[in-house]
View 1: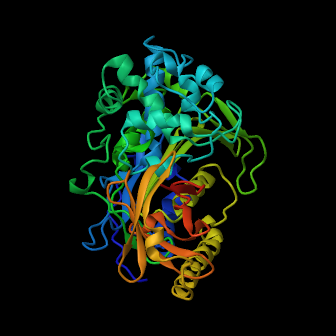
View 2: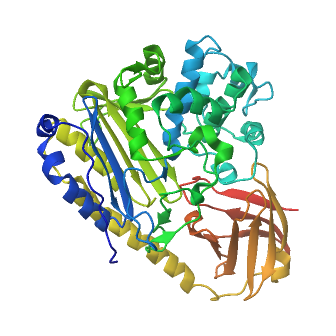
Length: 506
């Protein structure tokens, strides 16, 4: 697919001597590597900043933020940074711990008496540190189909936590938990009288001068110099998406920012809590976020010079070619982003992109780390691209094969038998009704505008297609006993949640 790639001017705040010290890949190849990469990986736009030795040496944009207007990405272009919000939340709570307003080892129920997990023992034991460390035993993304873009309030999401049956062991198994971070964030107003977004704004963003960073997704579409979200999943064609509305999960991932502002955050991380010579965060606060609270892996990586991976308070940490690296990624529909800092090298990286179905944003980060850590050059993008293209082609073919089955058989019961009200304990209610062209339509009542159509194929399977393509296209089945419909199984994109939901008919 041809498209115009607009490249903004590079912004260099470092001196000529700093530029001279940069690896040859950064000095000579970064531009061409990124330009080629966004074309090959079908990424409309990308912004990147690199900070080194206390200065921003690269801060620029590539490609476009809007495929219709062709407006270019620059260092001020806004992206949803999603789970890169988590370190701000962890830092805020570590700051309150430092100021003796709470202890990270306090029980969550001390501040949120109605908080419950699936079992009584875990409820009684769970601390603020536990819910910030993804170690309550639930699966990664468990519950997120219900919570993401949903209409539930923050309090209602916390109340739903008791319905998430864990598959792992409390304080032993890692399961990435967005509702846990929301729960931790809800402690902040109890202690300070300020909502999470107000406290982080006042205690972190304002002192750092992050004046073009926003705590919430609300109103993003109307902001200046904002990127549009895109995907090419399921269809293979770049498609614009609606903006996610995830302010009810705010502490887990609602922040909106740009590489110019994120650079300030990275410089502060690398200067032990100081920015432009002024103390913004005490060093013990920064240090506490980096302590490993859950060991995730102690085996050598097959693709990187790494051996150990752990999680702190909103940040991952690993070794890379003998250096300690702290990092996180963020994903919202249409956006994938990362932040990374290596204190021993005084190096920080952030990369923001507006296509959610690609891994170039991470391959680029590793390519930069390779350069600064003198690793043998291997073009990571070129090496990974064939698998990416194969995956896109296979997904497109899978959808086409499903579409070719539409109307090849007749449903076991009249359409009217499938219509009605259904309910899942965690999600709540949906309705199914007949629509034109011998189809059914699902309305998800705990989402503002989410619907899906059901078209009968054959072999008791229906093609389910969401009105927001990011949620996916899947084959599904009703469970039928005798002449009655008992339930339907509903799957969404793994990007949101891995396991399907069973909705039982009233």
